[in-house]
Length: 375
Image (tube, rainbow, N blue to C red; front, side, top):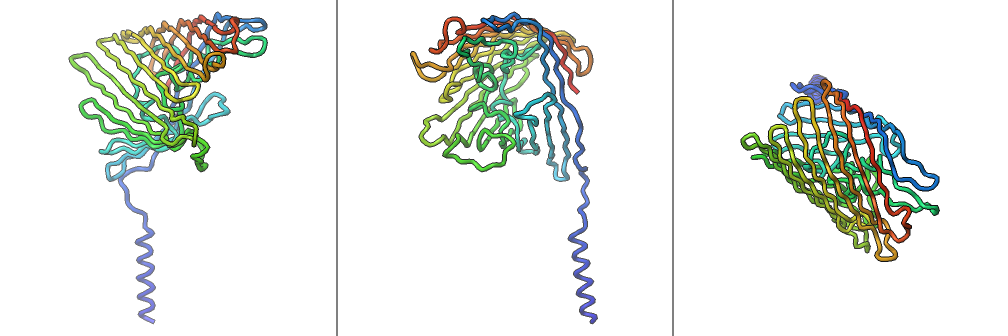
């Protein structure tokens, strides 16, 4: 009986030791709320056609709510979370980005739905109004349709070189992925990303015979100041390593940029290119200069984008070029509150065989003012 009691007591004690919570110095993650809101009011004079009137005053907005938090573990590693909720109606993607970050002496690792290193490490010219290097010009430039409904396609403007040098192969955007960023050494940082496919917020299995998959993206950038002059440069490459069987469409993307700043003045240029990407193969270039003094800032930017389309000659479809110039200004009114404005002009044209002369080009001039609020 004594042996049984001793054995039982030992078992209970062992169970209590195993079940006892560990004593950690680190605190549990506490999430804070932040984000941004942009509200814009503008007037646009747009080319029109019969029964189409795109000219006039418009109001546009963009906003997100961010839930972020992190903790530093007892072993020195930091773990954080970032969830970004679209504050405007977005049926296709109500949660914009959602990922976990692990940081340590090895650099940082992001796991989840977020852009790749090729996008996030890219260097482009500064801009102070609505975005010229993000495809936002398509919100103010409207293509016109003929009687049969044909018009120039503005597709491929976002995260693709037709409207941006911040690119990823196939315009992958916030697909589920793992990304590694190295520590910055003498101004140099390396990055590497892998994404199984271009899907976001989906845990379904991948049929590699049905979709292009296994995307790999790499980037390097350099940031350093020399005697008051700041130099930043980047180079990125991404490709699809597992193409759809028999498609022959091994999509790849390249982007590069350089930016030089001295005092309040800055000048920059960036470039992007898509190869073997179907109708969105093409190139884009952004050139810009800016000047800041105290709360004030002014920028002048030009963007040229083109996409090859598919087919050739009389069967050409999807081909287009787009040119935009922006003169923008900003004024910091207080912490996180900025007034901004843009005078812009955009033009788009195409040689598509199914477009007649009445709709193969369009132009728009617009004046936009607004507020940017971060919190």
